[in-house]
Amino acid sequence: MILSRYERMIARRYLLPGKGEAFIFLVASISLVAVMLGVAALVIVMSVMNGFRAELFDKIVGLNGHAVVQGVGGRLPDWQDVLKQARATPGITSALPLIDQPLMTSYNGRVEAILVRGMRAEDIRSNPTINKKVLAGSMATVTPGSGRVAIGARLAEELGADVGSQISLISPQGQTTPFGTVPRIVSYTVGAIFEIGVYDYDKAYVVMPLRDAQSLLLMGDTVGMIEVQTVDADRVGPILAPLAKATRGDAVVTDWRQMNAQLFEALAVERVAMFTVLSIIILVAVFNILSSLIMLVRAKTRDIAILRTMGATRGGLMRIFMVVGTTIGALGTVAGLILGAIFLFYRQGVVNFVQLVTGQNLWDPSIRYLTELPSKPDPVEVVVIALMALVFSFLATLYPAWKAASTDPVQVLRYE
Image (cartoon, rainbow, N blue to C red; front, side, top):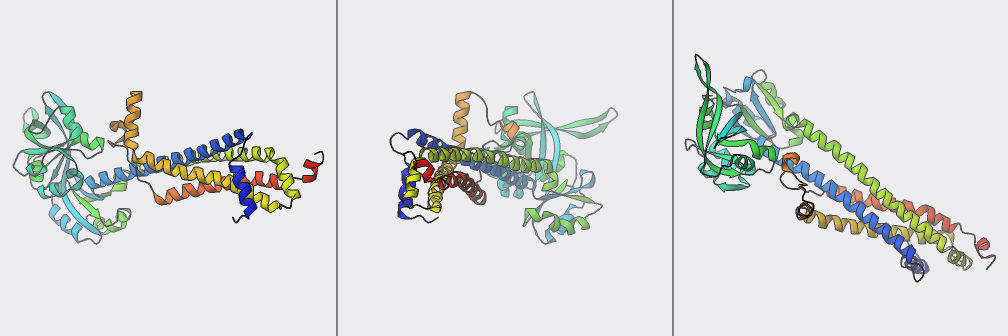
């Protein structure tokens, strides 16, 4: 919007009112702050929602793969053939044999439900999700025949176990006697304690070498499933279609969307709902701009009439008030983006501070899955939020600008 020299001067004068106009300036400042808070709130919430989904996806997929080929009945006897078929399928980048079995563990009289994961030693050492944050011990000690396992950090807390502790794994698949099946109890040494960052996993997982898991569960040379990684998680269905067809009847192919459908659908719905609700905050803030401009037009009616008699056009007056309102919205938008970026950078410190002041646990990992508040700003979303705030601010200026341009100088000045 191109303004003439006098229009710029008047717009600047109305943005910074002089003596006796402090109330109008206060209302305009409140409008700016309101837009700033609305934009900041929307940027912060959407970034946290994106970060929550991305963190969950990375950790869940990093531990379970994009899909699993699971044997019917929980056993995959010819897993070597399935492994070869998976690796030969175009689009599959890796295929690893796994055992996932829910069991019980005990230590010093404490008993917890666990999920035993059997992996080949080389796969344990090369898995970034497990090795990313080893809190104690070393994954290098978890080797076949060593009698050592790695456990999640929350499970270690619940059991009161540490590196070097002897924990007992209890399997219901034991020896059969005339009195029934006797549970199989085997002791293992904790060789490492890791933290994946997903509470449910850190509270349940016990990772051990594949051969040790086969021995514990009396599985012989069978495995439970083949974990598969693909080149594109969003195209996992079409990529795995040939493998699913080849293994039909012997195994079932389940991708990450089916395994976590309810969780990710709930996140998608919540994301849309939060965006809609918080957009209303920006709309309410823009109404403050509308009210402040209407007050400004009412206060400047005499000045507007004098400008009209001096030759100011209706279009010129409209441009002046449109620029005033849009400038307030633009400054509020920029300030909101800066405030949002600062909050996101120090988000965990802010959460810790609020928890310290209120004494409330705002981020309970047992409820929120993740141990820390995540964040992943989306540049496209940030641009959309900024444009939305600017468009709303511009639309709020139209009525006051039209009202100012419609001022009749004869009616205003006839008794002056």
